[in-house]
Length: 253
Image (cartoon, rainbow, N blue to C red; front, side, top):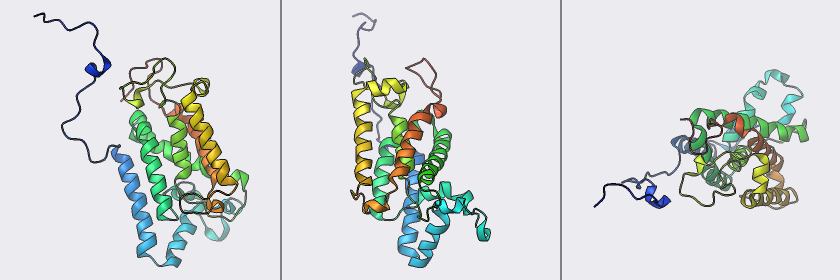
C-alpha cells in the first residue's frame, strides 16, 4: 500500500472534521452579548419601570432630529450620545425579536470576517449614518427614533459585498466569511446578491407606503434609516475589512 495521498481529493474530504461538541450559540460571542444587552434594556423598560420613566429613557436616549436645531437648548446634551444609544432601544418585543434574528443572520459572517473591534466601530458608524440619513430627510422633526434596524441594514449591506458566492466559485463548504470581497459591479452582476438587494428595497418601499411590520404600524417605522444603513454598509464596508487584498483564500486575524 502506498503512503502517498491521492492526487484528487474532494472538497468534502479536505474539509476539517466537525467539532466534538457544538457550541450553544452558533454566532460570535460579541453578538450574543449585544442581543442579551438589548433584551435586558427592553426588559427593564417594559417590565420593571413605570411607563413614564420608560418613556423618559426613550426621550433621553432615542434619536430626535429636532435636537440638532437647538443642540444646547436647556442644557440638553443628549445630541452627543443619542446617535448611538437609540440603536439599543426597542418599542415592542416583536420589534426586538425581529431585529435579533436578522442581526444573528447577517451580523455573524461580518463579525467573523472583520473581528470584534472592527465590528464595534462598524456598529457605531452605521448607527450614526442611519440616524443622520433619516435626519437629513426630516430635519427638525420631533419624532423619537429607536431600534437597531438601521445598523442591521448596514450589516446586510456589508454581507452583500462578500457573503454571496461570486461567479465561478459556485457553492462551497469554505466558510462564508472567507469569500473574496466583491466590487460594486460584481455584486450587481450576481443574480443572488442583486435579487436580495432588490427584494429588500421593495420591502422597505412597501413599508413606506403603509405595510406594517414587526408589531408596529408603518408610520412608526423609520424606513429612511433602514435605507441609509444599507447604503452605508454596502459602500463603506471595505474600509472596515481587514482581508488581505488579492488573496481569496486568506484573511488577517
